[in-house]
Amino acid sequence: MPGSLRSVSSAAYADRRVANACHDIYNQPVVDETGRRPADVAIETSGLTKRFGDVTAVDGVSFSVQRGEIFGFLGPNGAGKTTTINMLTGLARPDAGTIRVGGIETSSRLKAAQHLMGIVPDESNLYPELTGYQNLCFCGALYGMRKKDREDRARELLRVFDLSDAGGRRFAGYSRGMKRRLTIAAGIMHSPPILFLDEPTTGIDVASARQVRRLIEELNHAGTTVFLTTHYIEEAERLCHRIAFIVSGHIVRVDTVANLMGQLEGRHVVEFTVRGATPETVQELATAAHATVEAVSEATLRVTSEETIRVGALVVFLEERGLEVAEARIVRPSLEDVFVSVTGLAVQELKREKERATGGGGG
Image (cartoon, rainbow, N blue to C red; front, side, top):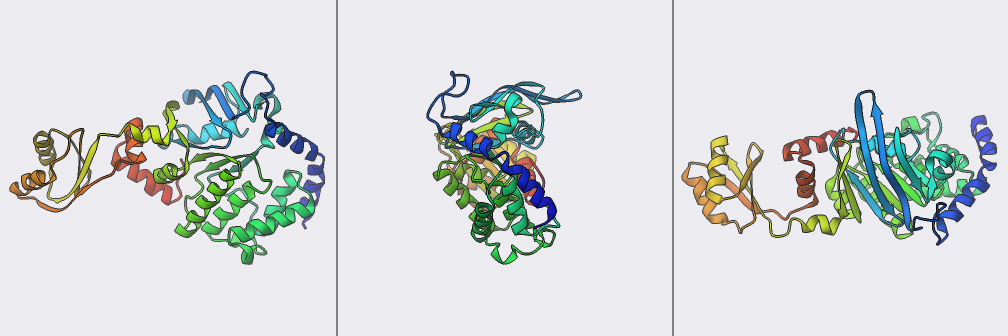
């Protein structure tokens, strides 16, 4: 083991009692240190604000995350997601407001609160000169894990993330997907009760993403509270119990996935694949259908109505105007539709954000 690992490991042992005490406090079925808030609240913010010069990135944000839930935090690029996470995890200091993690006030007891957290940033933060195994052991040492415990845990996570064969190789030589998987493994080395995941599946292959989502579900079933940001709306719909939408630094909606989807009940959506559609076509179709019509791409028109849409009649309407209708399909409302409705982000812009996320862009 490198000398730097030995020195950090020795220093970490002095903090082990603090870490164990924090976990014990978190798991006690009592109210938190103020005597006022219920113990089932894992994360709570009130009036959280952060400014960068004349720009207010986060403006008076208040919300709570219940213990044992997967809480989604969604919003367009530049909405304040990453800034909020940085404040929650102690990487940035709020200009105003309060944060409690596991009942612990972070402004006065940040180190104690951090012992309850696992943090997976949107970019890898591991050491390129160390092997995968050494990186995991190093992270375990930072959290005061005993040598045998961290070595056993490192081998276990390398196996779970299908990195056993690469465990002895330097991190610098890993592929992008392998780096992402090891970064997530490092975040859960100490089995934290609260896990922050910033874009956990961005930039990794389909099989690895499926594996990560399954692990998130397994961790949550075992009692881990998960705070999740993602550009993949369908991922949030699949995983999250509740979701908060943040726009321009403000929380605009917090609710369960079921309730968010419920606001779309009674809404009908049909998409037409049409060649040769013009802005005039969109306007004429909206008038004829008594509905909202949006060109979501060069060849796709989306018709939305509170009334049942007469698909056949609209196909005839388009064909009578010399347009070729290649397909007409009924679209089941999704959380993506809720996202667009709540944030005001156009469908085309949402697609561009997804493309940027796939290419490695942050939130």
